[in-house]
Image (cartoon, rainbow, N blue to C red; front, top):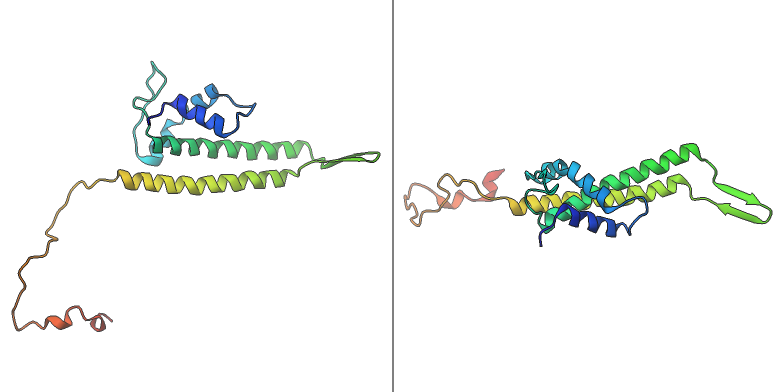
Length: 170
């Protein structure tokens, strides 16, 4: 299946459980603005068509998955920064009134969770990019004579038994 930027944005929006602070047009705009990140990561040369605001070619399933993870890495980095900025402004960790107590999550605990998600995503992304590149690799040129001749030199002056003797290697 092939994907447009709109398709990828929709998948990302659904993967994030449709957060209130995001929408599909915003994600699509981010993908457009960051197509260069995808190109650099996987060695492609997609461009945005100014008339359709989509890529000149549709992205493959693997390319879409990689772009999805690139977006998610950015998203979780922003979440970490947002939590840390909020922690600088609000450092209340509990409120007590009478017999009632409200405990707030510590910002460091929240950011640790986001960092763990981001770390896992980064590891997956590196693997996916490596697999993508490996599968896209092609042989451009074969040079030299790496074949084995079907004739064997029977010159009796050469002792062939010592050529591949591992004791002679050290």
